[in-house]
Length: 226
Image (tube, rainbow, N blue to C red; front, side, top):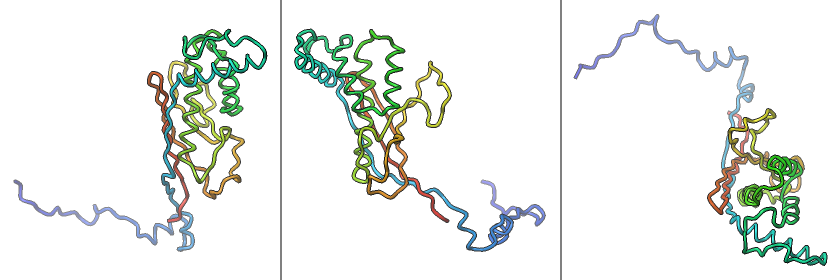
């Protein structure tokens, strides 16, 4: 082992750091009262929420609803297959699907949904619709759990998108942008008891066979003076 020895550094090579007083003076902060200009962002987790959707259950719900609608109109509900048969057929219960979409989607999400369907033409498997809607159902349910009781949300208060927040450029269609969750334009903070700034919502979605899983973390960010 080499013997330890204290390194000698000449005074002209020593690093020189300004004193705190000089730092504030050189930065244009003349006294303690001006130090309020310096702040940091404090964040904390307000809550977490998760939700799971069994996709075949949505399909059965849509088919049953469509059969009831046909019965009320005096039409033969047997024109649709039973909910248990051919559960992922083509466009079964389409009217019920549209009703469900109007219920849980914001206007912006509804526009996204219509474009998404048009891109895939009219004859695509219903499983794609179910997964698309199921993901948004699960995301909003998870967010509700993460924000309750500070916020009591409605379906129209939140929306899920697949492009980056604030990015209006076209996404590369070969990539799969990460979905994100945000408060909608129609969200009214005055309806809620919390006086905090709106939290940031972090969303994770997973698809596995017949299941869609959503996980949401609600994070509060506030400016603090240091």
